[in-house]
Length: 263
Image (cartoon, rainbow, N blue to C red; front, side, top):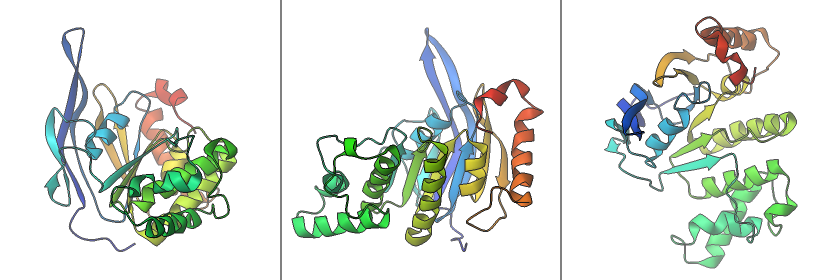
């Protein structure tokens, strides 16, 4: 992958504290890293280490207590159309068809109904749901519903897609299928993606780089670059090499946290 030299996302010394029982509880401490345009980055860590909080700060959905996030050199002060968040609960409106769910984000910016429909249908086809545009969410499998969510996000043509455990609710086969689909779509659209996960294999399979977080407070413990071509073979020895590197980061430093991970 050829990446731009200028980082698309710059995270400088981000910290976050919350009030609990009239006391400040620090959730994140001095988080700093950059993301290049077109990269897939995974933030990997046990539950409660602040992964989702960090993702919300990057997207502008929460404000940092200290530090800053820059997107294309401009400070992130709130949500924008440049950045879209995908959740594991799909977020589809049950009374809308697949087509109308994908059109949802386009309704304010595209007044021409024909043009809006054509664009939505393009992304429905991109995620492999052609022929299902008139179905309702309850008529779709969980994997199909997540594909609708991906199509809706892509239709807005964001510069950055943030994903918070997007495949955690799916069975293994659907999760693997959607991981492959995500790589195919990302290769075509060149969208930058940041993924929060506690699934080691998922992080290695999808990512160009992995940032491992440790808790209390949440901080970046290690950055791991994955020097493997995509798509990747989970049974390959090189894949297992990276899996062991990540596994040992938790096994030797915090053995009690192993139950928190899909390994």
